[in-house]
Length: 278
Image (cartoon, rainbow, N blue to C red):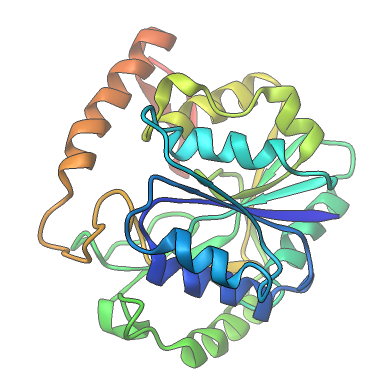
């Protein structure tokens, strides 16, 4: 029914947690699981080969002179999917109980619509900005743990269970990289545009095309994940005092590519969702 997909770049300690959490806390525990590792130098390739049978992973390892990046990695994973649904997720997520089932239930609610459905997120305050945003709860770094080494799994799972039990709402918003979508709808929209490789602004472009083609965006409170946050992009070394040179180079380049393609810059609604260009 559902295939979970992760494309990763040098996030091994977080990738381990992500994979373990999917197998432990998903409703569909034995779902197919595609992992794409590109240009990794941190032991990811070796760990995946050693553990692919243990976690029942379909593993693809590449070393490309021209990287596919985030969007291209999603496209690559999607090309391997044989189930009705694709479940994209970050390599630095930790999922809560039945997160996948509660995403799937949205499709039962809107059976005849093209959908992009995301989990509610919880993130440690990596950017020294404690104010949350629609669909994302910002918590102090020491609340649940901001690192793989100090993450309090038991506390998060208990907190998530209470949050999802007490809350029942939807936000009309999409989040990048992670989302549940029908494979046929992904193929229909054409996936991510390779011009934005290796990273940044591919999600704005994807969502704008989806909007133009009648997609509904749903972010339900019943599905919650912990997002350690930007580990392969902004903070690959877990140093929160400065962004990586990669992010400082690629973010403005992505903005330039978006402007060249669309003839303007994104306009956002009250939920922080792209709704057009100006």
